[in-house]
Image (cartoon, rainbow, N blue to C red; front, side, top):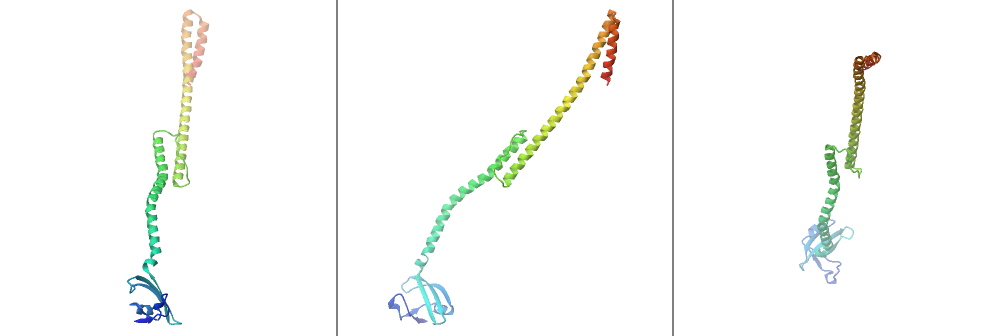
Amino acid sequence: DTKKIIYHTEENQISGQYHSRYLNYLFENASGNFEEESYEGVREMVTYINSPETEWTILYMIPTNIAYKEINNLTNLLKSVMILSVPVALILSVIVSGSLTKPIFELGENIEKVKQGNFDVRAEVDSLDEIGNLARGFNSMVEHIRSLIDEVYQTELNRKEAELGALQMQINPHFLYNTFQIMDIMAEEKGVYEISDACQALSRVFRYSVRK
C-alpha cells in the first residue's frame, strides 16, 4: 500500500514513499478528494487526479484550516449580516405594515362617519393597488349616495311647495267667499241691495272655485 513520490514541494520527500490508508480508494477513481491526518498530526484535504496516459497520480494536499479559512470567513460574514439584518427587517416590516394598514384604518374611520350621516368625507387615494381601488370605490359610493339624498330632498321640497301652493289657492277663495258673504249680510241690513247683489254674485264665483 505505498507509492513512490516523483515530485514534492519539499525536496526531501522526492523518491520517498507516499503512505495513506486511502490508497485503494485513490486508485479506484479517476479523481476525487478526501481528508486525512498527516504523520505530523495536521489534518489535510487531499485532492487527486489519476492520469491514464502516464499512470501517475497527482495529489494536492492543503491543511484544512487553510482550505476552510475563506469558507469560515464567509460563514462569519453571513452570520454577521444575518444578525444585522434582523433589526433592519423588523424596521422595514413595521414601515411596510404601517403603509398597508394605515389606509385601511382611515377608510374604516370614514365609513363610521358615513354611518353617522356625514356624506362629505372622502378617502385619500395614493396608490393604484387593491387598497387604492377600494378607496376609489368608497368615494364613488359616497358621492352616489349624496347625489341620491340631494335628489330625494329636492323632490320632496318641490312636492311640499306644490302642496302649499295648492292649499293657498284653496284658502284664498274660501277666505274671500266668507268675506263677501259677510258683506252681503251687512248690505242687506243697511238696505243697500245693489251691494248685496254684487256680493252674492262674487260669493257664487268663489264658492265655485272652492268646490273645484
